[in-house]
Length: 238
Ligand SMILES: [Cu+2]
Image (tube, rainbow, N blue to C red; front, side, top):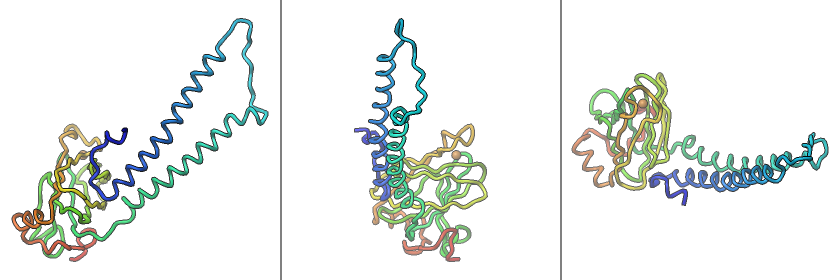
């Protein structure tokens, strides 16, 4: 039920991120209710009563210390299971980067997104490049690699439907990847407060079917080599 609040997942690694989130909610939720319930119960059960002085519990016997130690160990074990699941999701989304079918350069600047498609040589400058303001066109079911730069301050590229978010730090080219699984238009937001018009820093991810992408490419980016551009970050085909 909780998970239905999330926007539709259209990314290959989104399922693992969602199941990590579900695991966290299932572990933390009951634990929260139990802990808060016990606090409430003890507060009422052992409330101040006339003629009953408070007891100073020093936690010196094992029976007393167990109240802290046992929940402590349980929390730690549950924590490891969350670490394990989230580590796997992190590896998939951030560490393992499959070979891309399409490389796009993302330029973030206050307060816009500019998407540059490489020219004949695979480089992002010079002949044959195509750029789009605010709209990122990609084919469905293909790995897309983003080479992201910022012209000014720290921005953050976020597409909730892809379960993807990546900070962009000036002075560095930061890569990220995704593979969209369903054609459609999805919102892109900057999720790093980057100035007065930060809220206007939005864009659209346009995921096109193979046919529609071919048509789009022919019309707007005719200089593109066949879809497999397979250059590395920063247009290594140069
Ligand atoms: Cu921004």
